[in-house]
Length: 270
Image 1 (cartoon, rainbow, N blue to C red):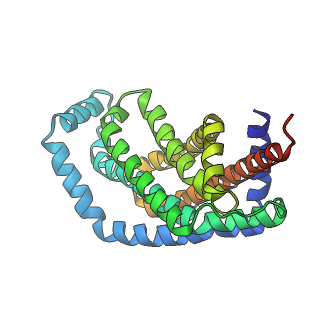
Image 2 (cartoon, rainbow, N blue to C red):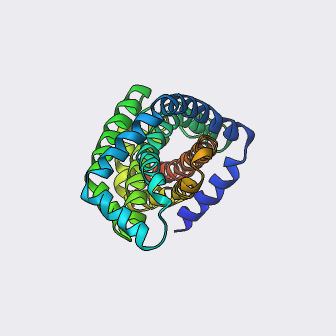
């Protein structure tokens, strides 16, 4: 727990460094521009398609009756846009995560290497292409799990439990590889993941819970659909900041653990 909290404090301090703040804007600009253009041209067709499906489904009729029963008839028009937003969120977050993992994370590790781990030998057990392949495979698995568990999101408290677990697992798998790719050998990385799987997963879940903050902002925008582009841009940057912070947290924890592993191996056996 001490290492968990110590790496958390160091990550919080590092996240405010100007270079780290700059790293949050690159994935933000790319994701916001790409998804902004896509939603700009596809927004109305997507909303119309969802509205048609809701109108002819048992779920849609039930929700409409429930809104009428509690006196929120105005939510009829907002339901379809809200569903489109809800389905877009994981895809946008995944895009930002891919950009962070493949572009920002190596810069984060180099930043930590220069500032705290200059004397830590670089054994290069991972590569950029290996990181990309690992990230893509892990992301595909996470998307499949997301689709399979999506019906459960309608039932409390699962809608508040499943997303952080999914994003936590995804973040843990992606960030751990990238944090150790430069400095650890393949054997060292596997040994560290086996030894520290629980705290690494805990870091992933913690950052996954942080990721629910922008989701709550997005959910609140159901009342302000007209401001969705502005709200979307703001929350994409928040996601980018959280993911850079996550990269720093994993980086500090993993490289500290690698340093201790090598120190233990260097001790003479008794």
